[in-house]
Image (cartoon, rainbow, N blue to C red; front, side, top):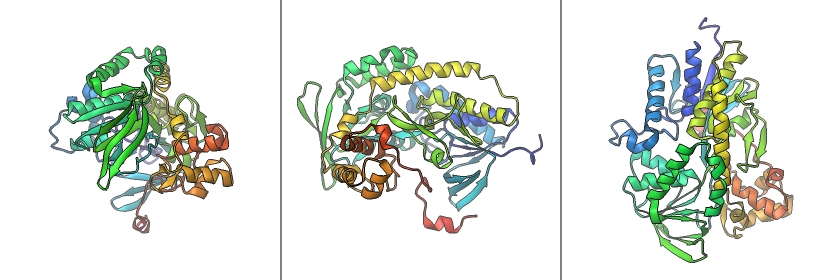
Length: 455
């Protein structure tokens, strides 16, 4: 294959999906460009600490240590052998017709590609609780990043809240590291969690590991709780008010709160790249339309949690499938994918079980008081959103233009799910009828000076 004639393939993301996609392309004789915001490959789930960090992979990744080591060493070897180009510490902030605007230390650069594989992963899905705008409130992912990358807990007395596997995982990791986790509050009742057991049985070993971690939390863990409000003083969080499954009011003193309800797919780049979307009732969020191999059309492929929320194992499979689809579309022999497609079916069943057992707390978001902050970036309240619905109707972008919800730094990544619930309750419609915020560039905050250096 001529190096000049070879199509240029760019992969965005160096987590499990991106690494497996890159390896598949390298094995086929291609030299992909891998762009990632991290300085070292691994993604969020297998995030690597700084050089010289003393905690071992077993301490950082637990039962996933072997997988993390394998992925890290595979990518590092391919990079060292110069069989791929790794653009570390860089972000794709815009894309149009095969041109990527990439932000790095030197400003914004242009990269042209023939095929684009997006392996952008996912971020925390959060639901507002009155008082969550105060200092000391973080997402579960932020707490996990601090622990993995820096070896620190973000508070001396910690309360975690939300629902889903990440809640249990972060709690167990913090406890194992010696942090003072005083309460782990799950909004999903036991009876709801039991409803997901049949599908969770698709991966019995994984489900069992989750139960073991849950057991290690002991009396810290409470299911079926009602979250009321976060109390704070001038320095930040001081306590959290909640009710247990029996309705008894509790007040837990703390100086740090971590929150999250599973994950939301990171889809902003897919959106501006022209991908079509559909509302997924299972996950109650908008997800890109792709075929079983990850094709989204026009030389665009999606892999990992940025397309389907199937976890790290699913991301590895999806990465291989997306790369195989890319090879096939280029007229190149592709590896056998039958076994991966079968595994993907089992992972989808397990994911369905998670969605059933740990649902998004839509009713909690719809019942937010008018003075509760929904959009922390722009300080937009639930009352302001309701007033915008009354004035302009129940369409997401119309409400956005009137209230400024979703116009801040995160571009709706954290406020959209709750804002949609508030809109639906006020407008009397379904979430899919509200729509979603339109994606726009730059998808990440970028300094104006960076564009002056664009080349």
